[in-house]
Image (tube, rainbow, N blue to C red):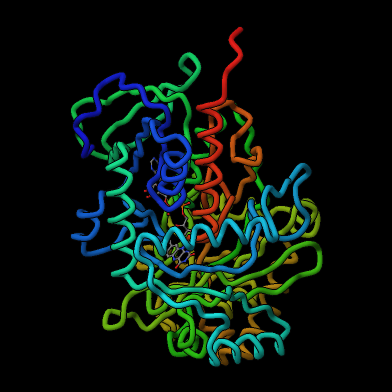
Length: 479
Ligand SMILES: Cc1cc2nc3c(=O)[nH]c(=O)nc-3n(C[C@H](O)[C@H](O)[C@H](O)COP(=O)(O)OP(=O)(O)OC[C@H]3O[C@@H](n4cnc5c(N)ncnc54)[C@H](O)[C@@H]3O)c2cc1C
């Protein structure tokens, strides 16, 4: 449903914002602070707040997006925008905000959240358990990623902030449309023609509106749409080297020494040849789920709450090369997903780690006898060991051996490797206020690789909001 039935065909907006995560919401907030008369439409493909709150299972999008609705950890330390990928950077990669300039902006976003009801105290350093994990990881030659100082908002605080923020925006004239698929059809006059359709539904009629400026802030899960849309509107987007690898399934109790102190431990090792290898998206007590992403079927994971847990924990082990590494030692990693999809059409493949080491496909019998039970019933037994660059398995074994110093038993031959697993990244060149090379087209937030967290995404929102205000109010020279 589009909740605001007042959106008539051809309604002219000054700014249409796609995405009501923290980036989109704070962009609107900043734009109205600088230019109060601006007519703004915020359209989100997900559900409005009240429907999200009624749902049994949380979805990644809708009012508040992913982090502000589901997470709530606010990292208040130093960072930069955009987030630099690991290893050698692409030519032309430009940092637009860093050091004290970034920190000032981050503290402004934090203060804004306070104004809307954030009450959590600041924790300057991790607790003793995480401190110990960091030291243990260091002794094993690994880097345990943490981010402090930080605040931890309760779910009550998060919902309260969101409700007040959206109310304030509505009072200032912002129109919200939820369950709305946004398709910018192209340029119209000095702006954009934008189509709104009910996402996945039967909304009787699409509505076309116009926008003098457009901000695309669809979050990490909207990155593919963002890449396609941004390119179609004439702005440059550069694909960065992919992270590729496997999703590993181990007994929940084996990984417990790590997940007991942090349900999603991020641990990495710097490799020779311009790459890192890392744990990614740990799903405690969860299961492996095939999802289609970037045109490939890949192994993702779903964590489960206490009381519903399986006997497994799954996490991705991904190698991520820099620009030089991707064409050198790590060449071919980006092909692994396609090769596995061609070998096993429509299915993930699962192979016992012992069989990976032997270079033998896992048979149905071996899988049936395996002590770690596969949580993905759709995955077929088989072989994935031979599609990765030569450097991958030695690096993976070295990484697992080091991780085993923190979680003994993790490298057991009965651990299950699912494939393919991959993550893709892009670089969106922009000016200092996140305007792309296409005049009037702005990008912000995690989808555009500008941020990796609530506060950072909020900072990109305020930057884009300032940029939109400048763009919309600056006198134009008429030809
Ligand atoms: C489960 C989970 C928990 C997290 N917890 C934390 C945490 O505690 N702390 C932290 O700092 N970070 C956390 N993160 C990361 C955090 O989500 C992001 O950094 C932050 O939400 C990014 O904000 P954003 O506005 O860029 O995108 P999002 O918050 O992802 O919002 C994007 C919005 O755009 C909408 N959208 C997508 N495609 C379209 C489209 N085509 N048209 C219109 N709308 C579209 C989506 O429905 C979504 O509502 C978490 C992420 C996840 C997935």
